[in-house]
Amino acid sequence: MTPHDGEYFGSADQQALLRRGRAMFDLIGDDARFGYYGRTVGLASSDSGSIDMLAALAKLQGNSNCAILPDADLPRWRAAAEARGLVPVHYARWSGADAAMQAAREIVGSHALPDDLTIVRIGPEAPDAHLSQLAALSLACGVLPPAGSALRGLDKPGLALLALDGSGRGVSCAAAASYLHDRHPLARQCWWGMLATIPERRGQRLALVLGAMAMLDASERLGFTEVFTGVEPGNAASEAVCERLGLTRETSSVLGVADPSLLPGGRMTK
Image 1 (cartoon, rainbow, N blue to C red):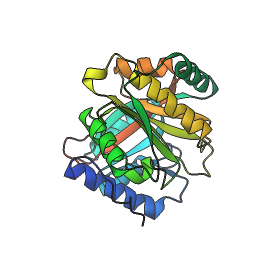
Image 2: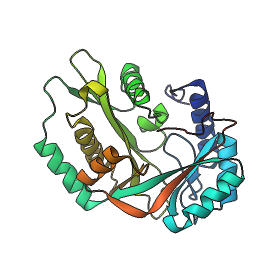
Image 3: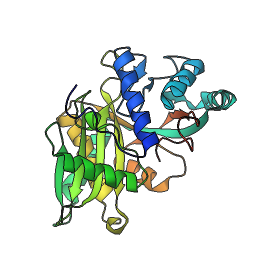
Image 4: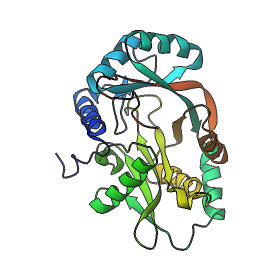
């Protein structure tokens, strides 16, 4: 156990869910059928297991997901989840490789951040206060941060970026983390996201620039060649950021499923 194994954020229910997710990762994290990025363990893809396996993961943890589900199979899996008393949430998969990294370089090179901002990287030795600032910012924007050990890159490769203003307040953030097992064919593809900006600093392209910086760090510091994220259909702002960063909509989706008896409201995060 490391000093940062207990860094969980959110409500009591959300923290309990993250703890169960970490325990599940400790139990089956070496099985390439599953993926984990600091929230809960899920199926790497629909080829990795059945809806029954996904339902079992959700009922044990409170939430789980199938990270790669062909869109054609989505209605059937959703109906099966609902029949088991679970609450499904659909996220469109967006991903990008070389073109996305080039777009990220161009954005970082052409969009300067406001002079009052300082970028800090959340790593193994980052002050607890920085991670707490990042978590508070993310939660205020409706996004549940992964466990601190994942954002610090202690469980698996991972990183987070936080923009601090002149008073030391967190105003924008982004993150990336390994999702799949090293033996999985898509192991060099990482989860990317957690883009959040406080309301009074929106319109300054902070999420775009920090998102680009996180993508480049994932590539240049952690060795990933591709990123993916899930966007709830109709979230025009997130879709626009993905398009600006060279990501494209796949013909597959992420299907999240929650057990409302363990996670009131049926949603893990925005």
